[in-house]
Image 1 (cartoon, rainbow, N blue to C red):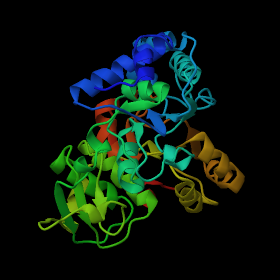
Image 2: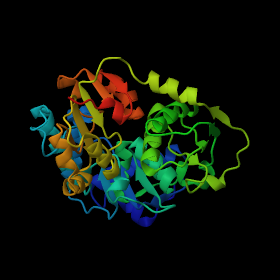
Image 3: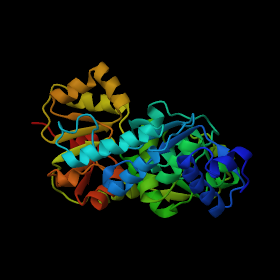
Length: 392
């Protein structure tokens, strides 16, 4: 792989050990995938944040990187969700030792120049690249969204490679950074109108079928951004989809030449929604916001629970930025008056909810329905918001 003179100096350690280690990761990736060169990136999004997933070894690795004096790149870089609400973990009874170590992880990332706002929806809080920008993102649902809905270009990075790219400001030029690798592999004609959790079910079905392929969708109705957020998450979690096209919706669909379609019926959607629930029991915790809730989604929750009392325990997970807007709009107070809570920085998948006394989790996210049983060992109920929330 070709390196500029400056990149050679970075690789040789002339800019410090942390940059040298980061260059080692990027060069190794470039060699594996036969990239011709590194390309400058406009933004990064880094996973590997929750103490639940990276543990003490990850904390030690990050603190070692952060101990080196470093002049961070000017890349706009954000973090994936952490394992706790960083500021209010005591209020929500998160384990103390876990929460203290979680904050140390986030502090180490901050010393490396990464924005310590923790969210899986960075495109909702200002990390919004332009069409055709090269970026290095690692949260799977955000990768699918930024590639597909925005039309920026990223591979499905791992946490270490996204961090290395954020530190250096570059990533190897291969995979989805190249035009020839962005064309669809399989096309689907959805013969039913979709609403709310139907998009998650569709993504689950198609992700299972195409794996790491590139699906093309012909839909009966036009999805909004929240629908596309749900579709992205389900495609990325049931398969390994990093890019998809929706006819007349996403920016690169016209580059496709489609002739043969696989049909998705209303029965397919309904059967999948039923399949994603693992029990018939009532949830003792409802978790919304996977991926993190938008302000519009929080407004929907507030309108549903206004002047009522919630029977189940309710968490709405979002970023601290969106929470601040919800506070100002009065949505937070409405939800709290009904007995619910808005949590920042975390979500039900990467939080230690299995150690907090819960058994059945209610979700309106196909990604969460897919991951909670395997990552948390808990049962899930997959239903629409209006069906999940019960009132006294």
